[in-house]
Amino acid sequence: MRLRANVPAPRSLSRAAIVDAALKVLDREGLDALTMRRVAEELGTGPASLYAHVDHKDDLVAAVFDRVSGDIELPGTPDPARWQEQITELALGAIATFRQHRDLARAALGTIPTGDGSLSLMEAMVSILLAGGVDEQVTAWSLDLLALYITATAYEYSVETDAADTPHGAELVSQTTPDTELRAWFSSLPDDRYPHLVAMAGALTSGDGEQRTRFHLDVLVRGIASTVPARRRRRR
Image 1: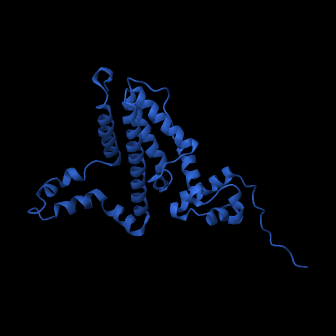
Image 2: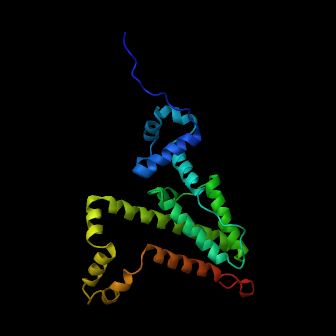
Image 3: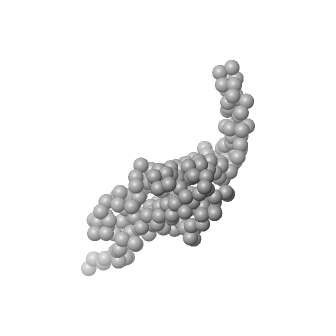
């Protein structure tokens, strides 16, 4: 008599379970590895069984992105006197959350997320901007700008992290910081052709990622605030 192999039965599938498995795959292997087949392997089942809950890969990626977006801590009631601080803190929190999940932020570039998690984040941003007296049209365009900055910055961090994980990148990090190498490269440029870049080699490569991100957001938020009529403007 032929004995059956001791293969565990696949767990009961649901959209939530599929998204959980997909997030595990993404965290270990990155966005490009996030396929229906790979997630099915993670769940111990076949790809066809996933289609009862997920339409296709794009739907799966969107669901994972929305799950992570829902993990971003939202501020409390918008405070007209602190709206600039609130929108900055929210943006920083969003960047930090996406950074925890490899290159997931890339999924949002060029798309408009429409899930509950993403919509809640958008609603919070809009509420804060409106509370600060920002015009509705400026609020709408500012939402685009802030979302683009958040996702692009989080994705850039993931690219740097993946590079450091390679043998060459690990060797580089252990020997010298990227800023030191980049500073030396700027300094080595022909100063007759690029006098300002050579002279500013130190300034161009100074500051860590957090300092630069805070500066960028400060410039963005102050720019948005400049559109608010003086009679409605709140001082930071």
